[in-house]
Length: 319
Ligand code: GLU
Image (cartoon, rainbow, N blue to C red):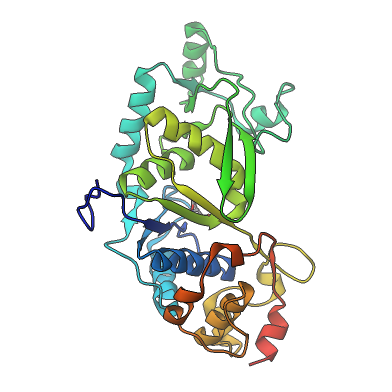
C-alpha cells in the first residue's frame, strides 16, 4: 500500500536521485538526474532526492546547496524534503541489529592494506572489485580480544555464502554478479553505503533506481541485503558514464564538467539540457527543449548502453 502519495493499494512509481554532496555535480551526474526525472515523469511517478552524506569528511552542506541549486536550474523538481543519510544512522543500525540477531554479522579488524595483500583475496568476473577474502569470518574470541587490546575498533561485515544474483537492468541488460562479505558499518562507526542505500530505498518507497553504471557491480550485494531484510526489489537502470574524446572518464582536465564551469565558458543551462537530450536521442543539439517537452519523448530503449563521449571544447565552441 502506498502510504506516501496516493494512499492506494497499488505501489506508486517513485524514482530517486541520490548524489553524494562532495562537490559540484558533474555533467554525467546531471544527465543521470535528468534521465531519472524523465523516467519518473513519463510514468506519472515522482522523484525524490536523497543526500548520501554518510562520510562527514568528504560531505558538506555547501556542496549539498550547490547540487540542489544545479538541479533546480535544470528544472528538476523533486517531491518532499531532501533526506540526508547523516540524520538516519538509527535506521541503519536497526537493520544491522536485525541481521545480527540472525547470526549474519561479524566483526572485521582488517585494514585496507591487509585486505589488499591477502593471498587468498578472491577475484574473478563474478565478484566486485576489492571483494573481501573473509579473513575475520571465524575469529576466535581470544583473537577478537587481542585486536581490541591493540585498540582496533573493527568494522561490521555481513556473513555471506557465495551467493550470486542476476540484475535485469533497463540499460545495461542482464548482469550477474557475486556477493562478498560486504561492510555494514565502518570501523569508525559510520554505516556503510550498501546497507544505507538499501534501507533508504525501501523506507522511501523507491521503485526505480537510476544511477551511474560504476555502481552496477555493487547491485548484487544490494539485492542480497534486500532479500535478507525482506524488502521489495526495485527496477534498476545504470546509466553509462561520460567520457572525454580520449575515452577516459570526464574530468576537470577535459575542460568544463560542472554547470558553473560550463556557464563560465558561455554554455547556459538551456544548452546543457539540449546536450543531455541529444545524448539520448530526444532532441537535436540546436533545439532548446524544456524537460517537460522531453517527458513524452522518453523511453528506456533510447538510453545508450555505451558511455557518452563528450567533446567539451566543441560543445563550448558551438554556442
Ligand atoms: N551516492 C552515490 C553517488 O553519488 C549514488 C548511490 C546510488 O545511487 O545508489 O555516486
